[in-house]
Amino acid sequence: MAFRLESELREPVATWLEDAGFDVRMEVPILGRRADLVGSRERGLTAIEMKLHRWTEAIRQAIAYQIAADHVWVAMPLAAASRAYRQRWTFEAEGVGLLAVDDHGHVRRPIRAAPSPRLLPFVREKVLETFRIHELPFQAAGGFLAPEEDALSPRDVGVRSAGFLTSGSGAALPSDSVLTTVSPNE
Image (tube, rainbow, N blue to C red; front, side, top):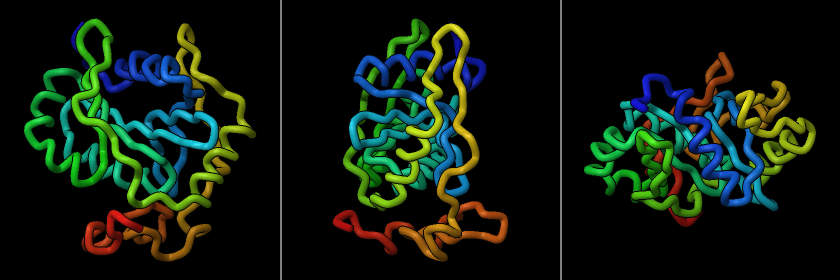
């Protein structure tokens, strides 16, 4: 099967997360953005941004999720992931993993996600709280359910958070340079 919609990547990627022992949710709010998939296991979170083609846009979104997630991934169809892999140094420098989904729904892991260099534990705790309040697991036959809109907003965190500025609309926008604002050791 050739992927025509990002939503077609959800089931194989969610199954990959579930097989690794994660509880999976879709469209989880993280500081004014929505991660396509988030997996929760014990006290950790893994966020995944899915794209059919635009890996540069996906990596920017994944970096934003590092504020709340222990590990972040970009998931793409195999052909697009192969093109993105040519820029693997970008993924590795940011600590973002790359998942490649083939036409049979098998998920490969060409680039492993590193522990998030931008993690804010209190933001992760708020997202985990959202998981506990809203018991909405992945449903293979019926699709996914999304949690309610009571997650932590950018205003709850403050004006600046790990290189992201909050705008009047509540969205988290990259500052001049995320790399100069937050070092990998912070």
